[in-house]
Length: 203
Image 1 (cartoon, rainbow, N blue to C red):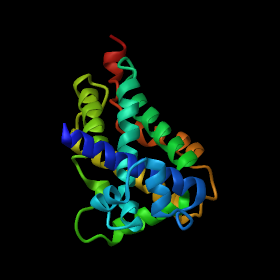
Image 2: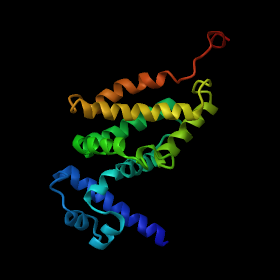
Image 3: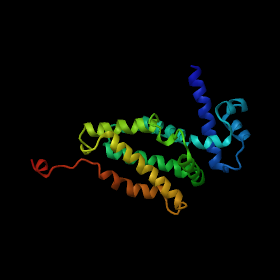
Image 4: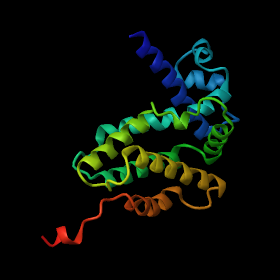
């Protein structure tokens, strides 16, 4: 039980921080603001974080929280490729409407410079566990090409999503992130869809 409470406290601090970062900007958000918004205490804040900068590395937690919500409402009848396209769309809508490009760029830059743990690559994240489950099911159902393993497809998909985010930040957000991923992600995933043998189709 204490572990659950501590997770909730840390989660409330993270959620409150990113909400404020988006609403009033990172530089104009104080630790006092975050403590007030999260209904916690300064002691709790400093128990989990050395300072405000430490929160920049927690965006992966925000992403995973979104994936946890999406996992609960996924349509089990939807095919693997369509499910991945839907998840990608929903996550990027969340990013576009709730996370400033400046903050996303800061996170991505910290991941490039990090020498130790890289949160975006942590295979224990809900993100990777959920995607591996979806892709493994797709392989079992024959929806995905069998000359690639679940791990290989997962790695390529995760790399694709990071590439979309990096490019959007590099371009200064000169195009719609959601519109672009809605156009390009289906084309990317089509490469992994199982091909129907023309002979099987005719019989």
